Image 1 (cartoon, rainbow over the protein chains, first blue to last red):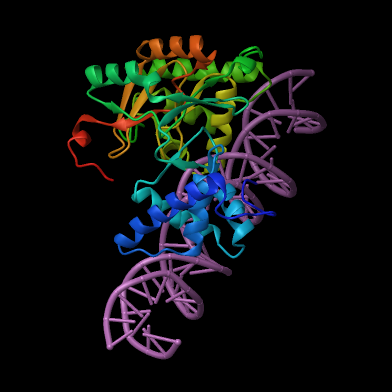
Image 2 (cartoon, chains in turn yellow, orange, brown, cyan):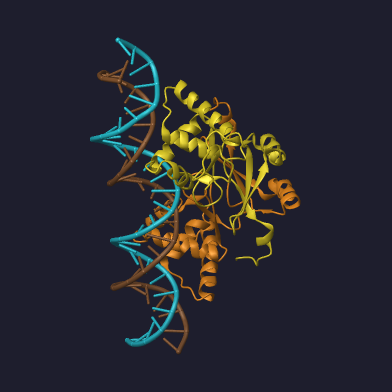
Length: 162
Length: 162
DNA sequence: GACATAGATACGAACTGGACGCAAGAACAC
DNA sequence: GTGTTCTTGCGTCCAGTTCGTATCTATGTC
């Protein structure tokens, strides 16, 4: 989904902006001695598209719509590489696989333990906690890497589980 | 560690208190149609001892010092059962396996992404965030289940990784 | 364009943490 | 002691991720 499957008109509207960003990252890779491969280009294109955070497996599916031979382990290795480059970050939204998104989208997550619904919260939302942790424990909180778990409004209505 | 290996004098000082608590939980199990088995008694004894949060594997090692035949999958099943009973809870302190501790110890965790050092923070520490999440997102945060990640004082000195 | 070469890839196997099915064993009520 | 039912040990399986390796390919140089 989200990838052009039919009627693809390359270079039209928003796509060209993404393409530019993709090439920019590929240039950065080259500067570091890396190479601009098809799998990396397609993966980056998928990442620069709008959409929810996706797992490595979901990204693999999107990539394979365009380049069917790209292996899941290649996705993992490329995500690693892009993370080392500071282009993407991964986040753990509760149990289950990690999700990946662009590093430019800095926010934390509130995830319901019962229905897995995820709410994005801006970093400012965590400012007070970050401040308190810094003062009290000399600890610098990064609210982006792991989600804060709890109960969403809908699941709060449900009876307690214990 | 922590389990009496030599010079064990059952019923002395703190141990007897733990033993009482262990039997109390076993009674609760029986009331629910469950059974008081050796593996459960030994596991509970380990859990009621002081010490850091332990993974299922670490608990298995402790249990096997006393009852060598207890299988890891039995540990998992018993921890599940005890969690259903509300006696223990598990928490995820970053990457890696879950850790288990008594449900009576209610606190959150600040865990360093770099050295895995864990700081326990009382639930009150998260009160403001919980309040804000409730008001802004109608979301009830449970700060105990997943740790809040970041950098401890020592690792804050280190150069950035990106 | 051909070539060399280091970096990247596909594939599969391995690994970790955990869940599950099942036959044998054990706790408990009678 | 007996029967019933719960629990266990063991093996197997699973998901998510990482690793080893032979092969391929992007890129700089000629």
